[in-house]
Amino acid sequence: MTKKPSRAEERTVNMACDIRLVNVIILGFAFMFLFTAFQTCSMIEQTVLNSVINETEHSNSSHNFTGSGYTSLSIIYAVFATSNWIAPSVVSVIGPKWSMVAGGVTYALFIAGFLKPTEWILYTTSVLVGIGAAVIWTGQGNFLTINSDTETIGRNSGIFWALLQCSLLFGNLFVYFEFQGQTNIQVHTRTTVFIVLLVVACIGILMFLLLRNKRSTDSDDLLTINVGSGDEKKKEGPVQAFKRAFQLLKTREIILLSVCFAYTGFELTFFSGVYGTCIGNTSQLENSKSLIGLSGMLIGIGEIIGGASFGLFGKRTIRFGRDPIVLLGYFVHMTCFYLIFYNIPVDAPLKSVNDQAYMEPNEVVALLCAFMLGFGDSCFNTQIYSILGFMFPEDSAPAFALFKFVQSTCAAAAFFYSLYLTLQWQLLILVIFGTAGSLCFFVGVESQPSGQGRLHANLKAARLCQNFRTRSAGGSGQIGRTGTTAL
Image 1 (cartoon, rainbow, N blue to C red):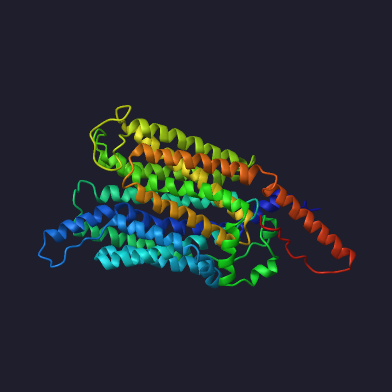
Image 2 (cartoon, rainbow, N blue to C red):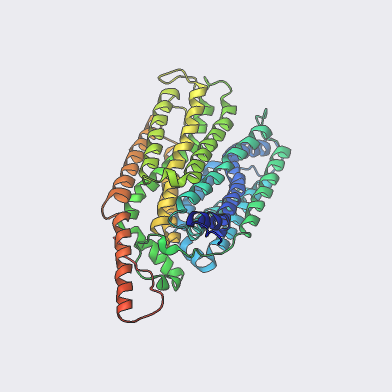
């Protein structure tokens, strides 16, 4: 008699053949290619445009280029923040796959604009990227949730995050070699770099076409705190999706999580724009300009290690809840901010300085802090992706749109105050919001009796009662998903 395979063996085979896991991996690689191009472009944007300004000033051209990379980034984040309100409606109409394709095209147009930069192209494509970013990230969150269940959402979030952050590694490495020894980026170098980046972005867009629109068959296992049944959700259109975003904004969970969302926006600006500037402006660091690329690579390595750890070992790391991972990220960041405060001069975000802080600026400490910034960021972001996908499986598009709205709004605000505030005040803002955001995550989402534990218990109880009533009445057919009232 043939021995029947155990449940564990059957589950292993099913996971190996699960198209949803393949979708998550393809999604991660698509974002890795696309954001290798875009993040590299945004990091060198100001330097490249300064070179363009120098070229036009020394040429016989009747028009001098005056575009600003900082202005471009400000436009992107401002439009990104406002566009998050309409992004769920777009995703509900064309679906997450084609939303990501459309959003990716705007990134490619932005990169192509640097082949022959003009002010109107720069700022127009910045607006387009702001809109495209809202659509692509809302679609990504929705697609990740569709291809996950209660047991895989943490793993899938970690896998995606690790692959995405590889873009920091490869992009910075590419720029490090291409710009080595150059003080002013020449036309030939600039053209070569942006053609390569454009090709890489197009590869990412084409990879979106490989995604399969396969709905999870066990989405009943995912927690939802939404109003209405699954049948009602399927009928929702763009107007309903827009209304759902406002409804979710009133829920207790989203209100508390918004503080954590805000912190990720502030620290995003710090590690992606401010910290590299601080290192480059600290003259007492040997080869401070070249250290900018190395610090970016170490931020990426920290992101990759964090994402891979919480993805590949997601079941083990999340065994005791998401709190320990967020707590780890909090302590890593607070230690990092303390070391930066002691190692980097306070005026470094604003100008080149030859002073020292409370210790002589140290290259090893500076690069260690870069790694800690990336690792801590991965702790927060992987758990935010995981908790949103777990708590809002039927409203993942508006939930992720709200996350990106709060995050990008705070990032735009941080880019603005970074022009005026010295280092210690920027670090103080990060400490305040990091502490408040972590506490809101701990108390409001994981630990409160009215949080996901009680909701999950209520959901199971409601299903049991409904099944009992159906059997008692002699009814047949599948019972629809039961929703609980938004808090």
